[in-house]
Length: 117
Image 1 (cartoon, rainbow, N blue to C red):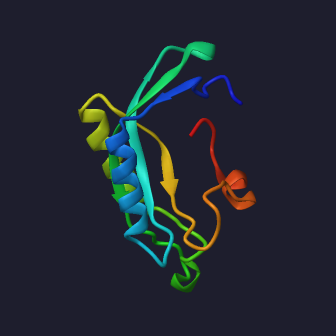
Image 2 (image 1 turned 135 degrees about the vertical axis):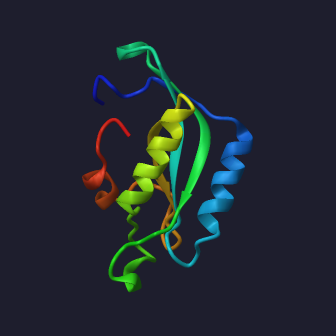
Image 3 (image 1 turned 60 degrees about the vertical axis):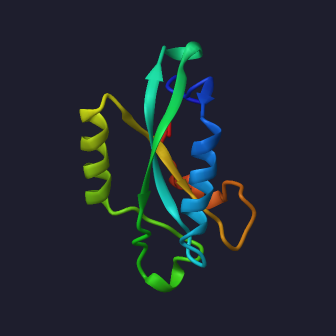
């Protein structure tokens, strides 16, 4: 865990329901979504609060591999960052589904994750 990693994450149950619906809607491909919110505190007292979801298209190439891989268009990320910043929010990370496997980080997920997201 990096020093920027949160010690807690606040999430409204309604956002979790919406996140599940967003990710399932992309089936049979992996669905993806940016997580927007706020970060409070530092170090061991850092708490993140999820406040908005930004559904994204899976643009992984080649398209035939989108059932087990995902990529978010960098331009879409920039638009989300700008929108969030104008509202006092930040991109906290990304979420994606695993339509063919368990909802656990795969070795590929772990290798491609940039801390602290």
